[in-house]
Length: 466
Ligand SMILES: C=C(O[C@@H]1C=C(C(=O)O)C=C[C@H]1O)C(=O)O
Ligand SMILES: [Mg+2]
Image (cartoon, rainbow, N blue to C red; front, side, top):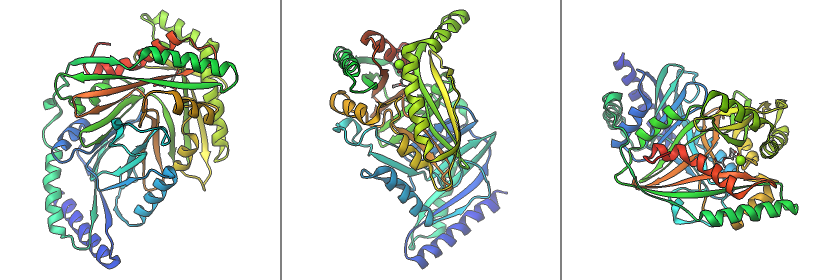
């Protein structure tokens, strides 16, 4: 069995080198195997011995998880970033040789990455390793889907390459990636040494400024975020953090994009958009309340949230904008009249799904471009709220609040909004981000408390108290 699989790859490598020679340019070879089911966190942790550029993603509902190691190819763009990434990806695919007998989502050549929230915002050193858009085709991609595991090997083959050598290198790395078992994985034992909320008082003043501007008609909703800096007593174990997030933050996308010594990760409940064979699913998620301590209290808080004018207003701007945005690209649009509750471990949100059929001429990247930022992270209207954030918000959001996700060779894929997230630097310190939707009735102290409950899940897995 293994013999034929291995033979298959070597043959494919020889073929790819021949094509690269003939076309006089490098070819991406993407070769997919079915493998024994493996814990994605084990694969991710083993990957550390091969490369420091790893990716991780699990979706909210279906059993779908991808973990990637290294980069066979990277797409980076700062100008016209959505169009440019899409074009580069299509061009890349034109020079890709795919051997994938499985018609399974997330296998074969996929590209994983993200965008910054606002390329026009003044940049700080914090995000120095993260471009305004940056996507990578991992060298090794594990896909766990509906109880099966697949391994896709992606390699950029040059005319001068030697199949035997590449194959030998691959076999060595593969055995490292599949080594051991989950029981040997370490827990994250780091403790938080220091915790610093960045300028909470001036943030509250900014909330007042925003409400005043909203009252005089500048905009209707402005989302304001703040940051918290923490340091650890020892280097954090990223795999263990991901595992804890998967355990605690159900109903969330668990994601990580590692770049050298930095890693951006999080557990976001918010889908921006998913496209599967032109079926589109987007999500309106805005409006927040804590969970109750008892079942009864929880239900009562939920009922209040559903009927609360201020939270409904925060939510309804998102529904209106997403509905309007997909109208141009979609047909058969279905949006429920009323939101429902979306429960997370320590808070609950108002949630409205948007389903539609994406017209054939339109793509996932185009929808991402159209939607970002929705009023869940920017505000309403988009231009005015963005301008306010750009001019007055103190932090550099970087990739926080922006689309992060994957796209396959057929333009299927999914993007989440990167909230409930942190940027870990040098494994010894982290910046956490949390924001909230400010509308005319917003009270600075309550909004401040709302951001505190949004920080809590990340803080707890990083070793702090909740
Ligand atoms: C901005 C964040 O979350 C957004 C703001 C919400 C709100 O204000 O009610 C709820 C969900 C998200 O739309 C965040 O988590 O940082
Ligand atoms: Mg809110």
